[in-house]
Image (cartoon, rainbow, N blue to C red; front, side, top):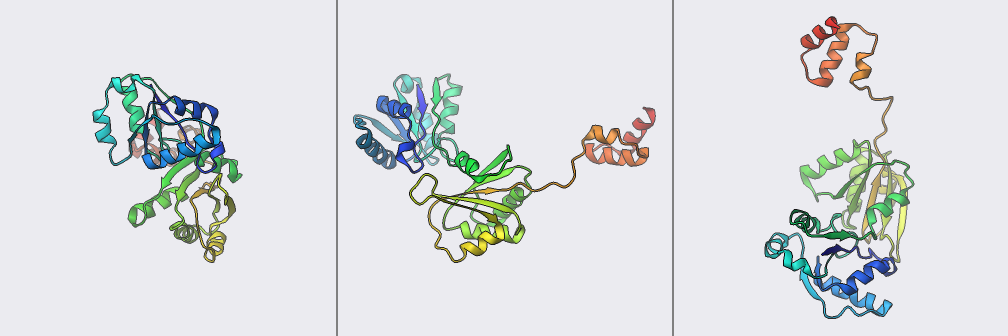
Length: 270
């Protein structure tokens, strides 16, 4: 069986008792980085008086996952197998999804344990009451793709959440302040760690504030949805409008891609 175990994103106390038990029982541990996982288990062992010795470790990350998957068979999962990423929830902007897909396709039992997650924590911290959000991960560093994705974010009718490194946070704030200076932004720094902090203001105010700050740590950025004025009409709303058939036909044709002539004829027939 495979168990995906989330690891702390900062504070070691955030690991669950269930996760510790699964890790103690694990015989084979797939890791995003074996060095990071071994160090983490050493710390957890010391804090909780647990023995994590006699484990087999194998790296499993974006650069070698195809090779590793080809080497697996059902026999591999006859023992207790665990996957952990360096920090947080596997598969969420971290490796692991292809391993889950392998289990599904080969009818291998698996489980995913709940645990620390920067996205949901920042969402709860932000104070935005929007119930839906889009997660964009890390944006491309530069180029047309980055500019296009930023436009998608600013035009999204849902809350937008993304990750940003300390080296590019100021650049992101500058870009946002140019494109939409009055858009409300929430920033969460080093969630669960000693220097955790958060800020909520317009993109322009945040950019001006951070110009004079030595930016450190990892950041989660939460961006307020684009405000909509009025309301959106659907096809039924258009059909029920008391307006001239020609105008109605043009609106319906625009929404559906049909020809104005065909729509107009159907309206006359009805």
